[in-house]
Length: 370
Image (cartoon, rainbow, N blue to C red; front, side, top):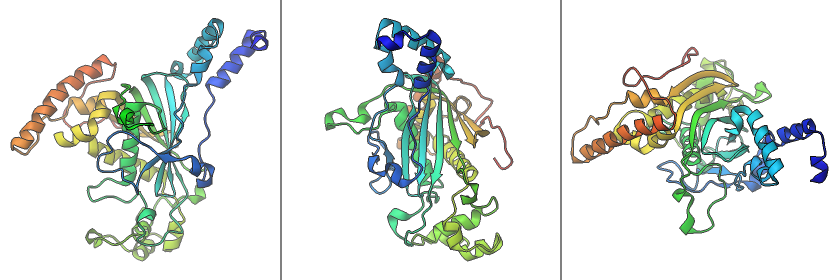
């Protein structure tokens, strides 16, 4: 310690900057961290999370990098505070990595947590696809691609991303399940707020692993062929038919190709919007935590912004009545109207934007087809 403090200030500053900017490694393949991944515990998971479709996380809770440095000494505390001011958003910016592992598991890693904070300026949430479903048997439940759309129009990936976001906004960067039933993670509410939530969908380093831009139908058809057919599949083109229409590649070719990040980004944006905006029941069930704690959600593909969901616009222009009438829906409407009034006040108090021009409006930075 004495040796470090005897170094010139500019060298100490450089070392502190490097420490505070350090990041945890993210898995590049299943063998990298499979043994360290445990099901993410805590919070009501609604209808998505089950034993065969969990979100996995590194069991370690991410400790803010600055915490130990701030406790060393008074001088070290002051120099660490100065170093935090040099970081993007003064350390109030986190990085989280989310991996769709082989299309059947979702892995979460808290990559960069420089400062313990509940009011964050930005969270950079990278979404990566690692590995494909090759090697699985048709109809094998645990091997079905999570990219497939469910009956209600969303996908398992959408619900997984939603669950991870909702849990983070409640419990913060915690990974390890609680030791006792009396101290459940679901009981923790740190009141996290995020001004800008950025979901950045990344391409692999080798873009040859991706399906072609015009091969979406054939790619999806190859995933549907690996599950037990359902009654709703009559209008879905066969793998052979879709492949013939898009260039003649075989099903095996597509099952070894990764989903393109722009497809997943577009699906996630549209399905997430569907979950959080619409009826009072859906909004209270899924949208509540996002509207109360997030300013806007920015969607990127390889760092390029392709669309946003401005939650301040959506909540301000949201209709407050359910179309159906009954005692049940009257109760939902009354609860929703009370919540709607309070959430507008709470957003303003938290410095989150509120404003819009009518029902369902959403600020969109358009790429063709978005």
